Amino acid sequence: MDFTNDGPRSCYLDGAPNMQPLAVGSVPIGSPVGSELITDGGNFVVLKPFGGVANLSVFVNPASSFKPASTCQAKGAVAFRFNFGSPSSFLLSLGSHPIFTCSIIPNVNLDSLKLGPGKP
Image 1 (tube, rainbow, N blue to C red):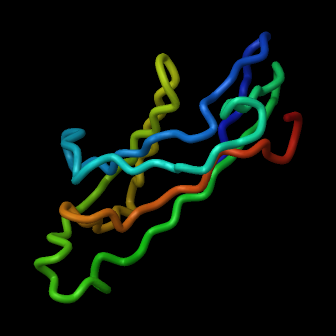
Image 2 (spheres, helix red, strand yellow; image 1 turned 135 degrees about the vertical axis):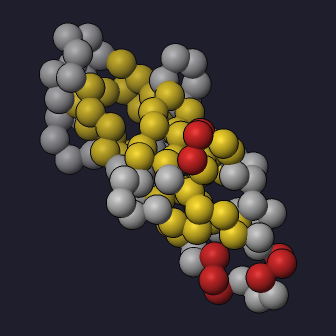
């Protein structure tokens, strides 16, 4: 996922966000997951104005791989909410590509935020 600063001033994002899978109606599925990795510079990534980019990777372990299925209790996720600390919260709709995520144990993980290609 890429996060781009289109504004006229530098901004910052916490390098270790939390992410919450959401069902229809923005109902949370399971507990939020987060990256425990710490970035250089105090755990924040500074994005320059007019095009600064940072990105992170989201990894999904298929809910169907958990056996027995009761250890996972899969539910359909239609979006992810990323919280970098107030006021930086983003919603990623999965559109026509919903996934099944576990409601008991996390099967979705994310990497720490890093400066991306473009104008960091």
